[in-house]
Length: 230
Image 1 (cartoon, rainbow, N blue to C red):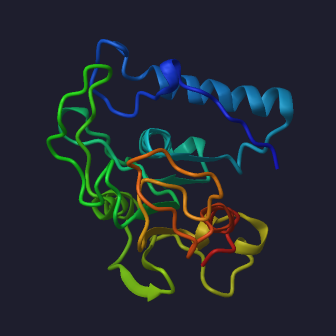
Image 2 (cartoon, one colour):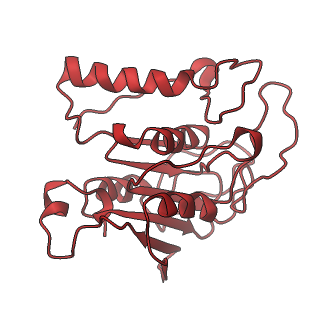
């Protein structure tokens, strides 16, 4: 596995389509991501059919933006504590792609229900956002998914939408990694979790809420992206 850790300008990403003082060209980071992928394919022999994007918070929203606007670049995407921007910065999925959204039920920084009208920030405008569920549902709709199936699991709730091009249960696609997450969109709402990475051993900043140990977000997203997390 080849892993790249790009860092956005001023420690942030242009996850929305609205121009700001800090980011007058709102499409720059999408083009940068595309150029980075092409560079890794050309120089590091990355498999162009198995490129995945994941991120946390603003980075999660950026991963979702790339997944929404350029689904042809990726084989799957995962966002932890990040939602799709809305309002005048709205990002809308344009094609089918396996996507997972992991969200803390008690997130005090970016609420689970979204932030239609966030307060102004003197450093960088905070973008309005969809709820975590509406974020996942938008990707499901773009993939032509049917009705979602919800179930409660130990420490979290999982909602699954199966995409129209999903591989059948007896297919070898999952074993070969050809269809991330068995071609699904999934929302995992983690109980007793804040604006944090579930399973992390790193203490979060003050005001970010608790870290749940009920879910190993890293292992879960890797299982999803490699097709074994059905």
